[in-house]
Structures are given as C-alpha cells and as structure tokens.
Amino acid sequence: MANMALESRRTPTYAPLGGIFRGVIFFLVALSWLLFPRIFSSAPAESLRAPGKVFPLGETLVYEVRWDPPAWVFFMPTISAGEMTFRFQEKVSYKGAPAYRITAEAISSGFLPKVTGISVQDFFESIVDAREFCSFKMIKKTREGKRKRDIFLTFDSTSGKGHFLAYDAGKQPPVELKNEEVKNIPACVQDLLSAIYHTRLRDLKIGEKYPLTISDNGIIKEIELRVRKRENVEAAAGTFSTLKVETVSVFGGLFKSGGSLLVWFSDDEYKIPVKFEAKVKIGKLFGTLKKMQGTNTLAMR
Image (tube, rainbow, N blue to C red):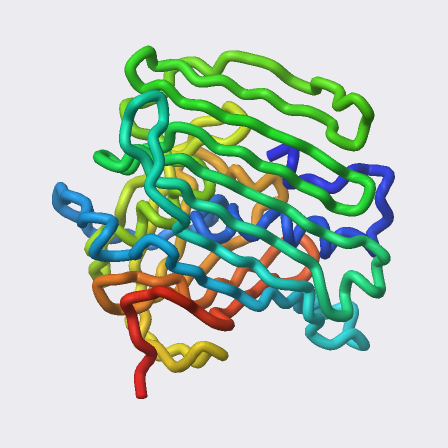
C-alpha cells in the first residue's frame, strides 16, 4: 500500500511512528502474508450475527500502542507511541438505506513522538449497510507531521463500481492527488475499519479459516482469518479468555513491507479485539486494550 510506505525524504528515525499509526488499522484486519501457511479445515457457510447483539451503539474501545525496536537497536527499550480509539457510533441513513457509522482515531503520545518530533492525529470513518454489514463509504484523514492526506472511498455493489478520491490537505487549497473509478466491486466488500467489526459478527472456531474481501485505495484483496488456539490475555482493561487469530492475504500482501500479524479476540459472543502484535519492517508493533465503555463483554475475574 502506497500510504503505508514512508516518504523517502523522511529519515529512518521517523519510520516507526509513521508506520505505526498508518498501519494499526491494517494490522487489526489482516493485511500481511505468510511464507509457509499451515493447512486448516474450511469453515462451513455461515450467517452473521445481529450487530446490536455483539457491539451496542456507543461501544468505545481504547488501545495503548507501543513499539518494540529491532534487536540491533539493543540500547532502546519498548517505547510508548500513543492510543487508538474505536467507536461504534450510531445508526444513520446513507442514500435512503439504514446504515451504521463507525469511527477510529490514532493520536500520538508518550516518548516516541518526543524523540521523532512528529505528532500524529489520524481519523477514520466507515459507513456500513445495517442489513448486510457491507461497506458503503470510508473516509481517512491522516495528519502525521507535515504529511496530511484526505481519502474518500465509496462502494456501490449494485453497479459493481466504486470511487477513490485523494487530496493533499497540507496545501491550501487542498491539491487533488487521485480521482478514479474502481471497477469490479464485489457484492459485499469491507473497508479497513468495517472489517474489524465484520469479523466480530462471525462465530470463530479453533482450527477453521474465514474469508474476507477488503478494499483500500482502489485495491481489492481476499483475506483469510485463521483461528489458532485459545489463550488468556492480561490487559489494562482486565484478563480475558481469547482466541488467537492469524491473518493471511491470499493473493499477496497489502502491507508493502511484508510482516506478520496476530490478533487476540475475546472468546465470547462479543469477540472484542483485546490484543494485537505485528512484526513489521522495523521492529515490532503491539497494542493492548486499555479501557472499554458501553461493551457487553466482561473480563475474567
């Protein structure tokens, strides 16, 4: 993904921060490939559970994001990078159809932005069909130091077409970078934010794999979620029984620099992402659930 790559004019010192916050959404929804995937039995055809029973309106999940330097930078400890906040906001109408609005924010804090001198404040918004939970629209507004981008993605499964519009918001007035039609949109596609919630609507079982069609920046990818095993995870929000899920991009990685991803979902009917861990080009990115509001699930006592 072009927007995942660091601009060449940035020095290596800045790489972790930009990569962390442009990458967190991607990491959570399975956008890397494995060199030697294990074989799993395919899950049977499934129907999604009702969103209202899994994540109520107003549900808020806050994650602490940290960066672990590569081994060769042995003198650097694990560093706090900031927070990610996900909100299942409200029910809305999109072109006359019932829909849900989901948002996410990434804000830098802690030691890493102080060292790099780069502040990050990214915003994501997804509008999904309330009936089929397919994406209608996604907005991405990234503010990472001097780099400012506004991206608008829309999907129309009826016509099989979408639209991708990007601006350099650092210019006044904003400069159009790309304005193009996206063809061959499938009947149901997920954006990078809706895919997290779509996964939570599934009945994940150990040893099975689950397909997911996802689009970002005009690229359509087929993703597989592979459920490895059950583990207990300690987080600031509590201790949870979880399902450890590995993610695979079936036809090549969307994450340009490769890497690997693991996500731990709560082992209950609500499937809250409790923890994520990703080996990236420079070190390792990980995050844990810091606090939650308006959720149905409870941590283990």
